[in-house]
Image 1 (spheres, rainbow, N blue to C red):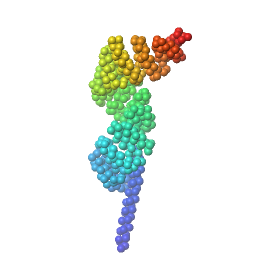
Image 2 (spheres, rainbow, N blue to C red):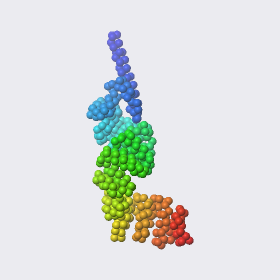
Image 3 (cartoon, helix red, strand yellow):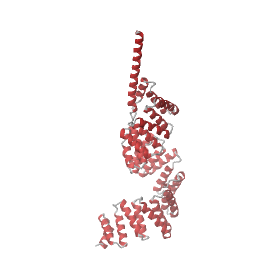
Image 4 (cartoon, rainbow, N blue to C red):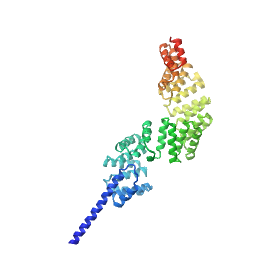
Length: 444
């Protein structure tokens, strides 16, 4: 009897001791799993496994190790078992989804497991983050945006989520917000290799070219053989006027990826700005051969022909650019200008159809609309389109006195002296001497 009682208490003590070790492992795992930045985890993983080697916690850690070693099949076998034996253990579904997403690129099935995680624990930020990454990988950027925002609402310090959120914002054309988010991330917490690439392009879009050059350079330090990063730095160099450095970066990108249409486009533009138009056309043709759907090489090819006074060829190139992008006012404007210089009044109708489209689209720069107004006014005396074009120029850049002076001339020749005097008064106040002269001659 005494032996039986002793055995019972020994067994009970063993069970209690094992349970205490399990609870300690659970406590450690909870802290480990909820640490979104996973800093200093190796020792914790080893301690969890030593405390509860056959637990769901240990299975999760072993599966993550296998996935890190790219042993995807073995990792999925373990997570299948984990989900099967511990159906209420949310991290098991999280592991299964992560391996499917990162290791197998099986994004559709990964969506199910991350959605199951949210169902089991709607307060865990990582599930929203990883489900967002899955939608991101499927190019469903709007859905990803919503999930990344939910993640950060729960855990504002999840820097992985923040990096994906910033990149995703750039891809949905919210460049200002993307820059604001990406700029907050400290260099030591950068997790995504493309971080510097997208930060660099945010800075390019915002015309922060020295900052973009630095970002692309940091990206190249991290990934020296990233052709896209080298191409990005080439663009930054070009906009900073560093032509030789730009050509070097674009050519290095082509060494790594000979099919890069973007690098050939960059080289073509550098030669264009260097006024080496024949060499520019050669590179632009290479870009066109590699990417037949991009209108930009056609536009710059047309511009190179225009600069060489090859107006017939320019019209053909701008026409192709328009076919590929019906919403680009520049192509309509320059096709109209080229047609005017090629055949003049013989192409009157097509010239003004192009000018009217450029005016309708309103997405060129102020100088282009000013030049359009000058041609329509000086050569053809078409006052209506001249007024529309110069008015758009003023809307874009209200600080250029030339625009007000020209609008005054158009009003005056159209018989509206009162409006002409108003325009010249405005230009005169801005220091325009020609406007002051007209104001004195006609308005006083």
